[in-house]
Image (cartoon, rainbow, N blue to C red; front, side):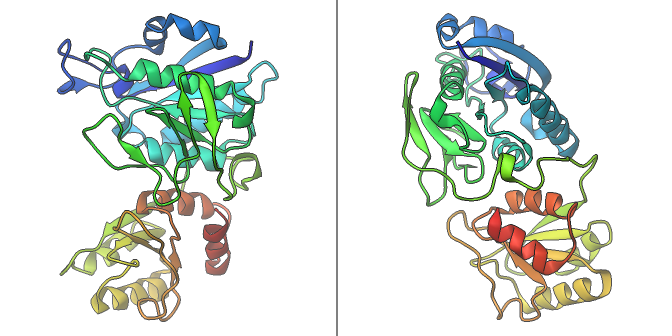
Length: 327
């Protein structure tokens, strides 16, 4: 049997509230060993060991926790006796952690994340079944070299492209316009596609992780938004991601402020979009002086992760643009 390590970080899957209820609960209250004990059939899938790395609501995940998690997974996955990793995580920021790990895990062995929309104390809690399938996926030979994946509601998602699209239903995720990587039926795995963006062992960020990440902010553009927020944030951040309208767009006032901050303070900008589907290209109308990097298909929060890591390698705008094309 393959050896799978379950690394637990908390989240709703470990949440406790009023017995039977699905709302008003505290995330990260029970240990993963207790969840595993509720699904005895999982022992037929693999030899499992668990590690309770942390036990928090996923809104407590930050750069320090990401680096701690990535370093620990890299330690575990380099062991010859470890065949794959499953990470339990809260759903609110699972898409961010998944993308961070997709860029920083230095192995082609399966790394699968999962979680739950209902706490462990709820009637028909979805966490145990998601965890069962995540472990089954991590044992699958076809799961190697797929990048970091997220297993949720019988569906296999790419860590790069997954996004939370519903804050209420248990089928809470989607993968933009690209479709998912595949599906599962109980413990059986069916892959139908794969990502062609650079990830995991091929990523330049995965061999030597930094001790800390540069500060990168996200600003949401809306009609009438004050451009001085860009100047304010540029004083304390190396770079700013703009969640713009449409194709990463904004007003002339914002355009002028971007020019000012880029020229006077050296601030780096990325144009992402507040629209959930689509792609952001270079645009000489909204970025005539080419100060901005186009986010491609990355959401603002994922563009922030990529730029934070990229800034540990280079500050050259053309090199940063190439990184965004590649990853």
